[in-house]
Image (cartoon, rainbow, N blue to C red; front, side, top):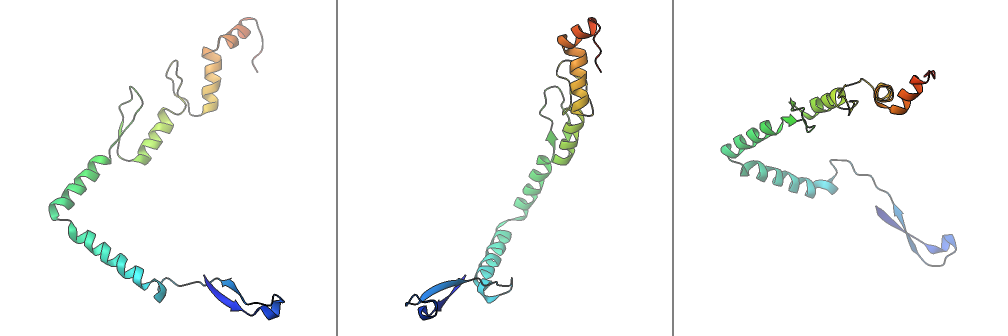
Length: 133
């Protein structure tokens, strides 16, 4: 932001004062030239500091780290990327019954299953002849 000195006589204050003025710079404006030069130099230094062996090691580390293991006990799924893990988790673990390990497509169906199959209150109501609609 820049600023402009205004005469206080026009506003009735009697003394001069500063008002901030917003200035917009383009990406190629000379205002940014010093920072752009420094950024380019740093980028070249980082690129030049790596040897071929170091570049090869970094590529191997990245390949190894891409394999994602499912942390759920007993699953043991090995997935190629984080997106594949998210899909796997949503399909296999998001709506799974903790008692019988059955998997349901939605949490609503899981809730109905838990009520019907594992809830003693629900089973007692059915035994007495109450309608569960």
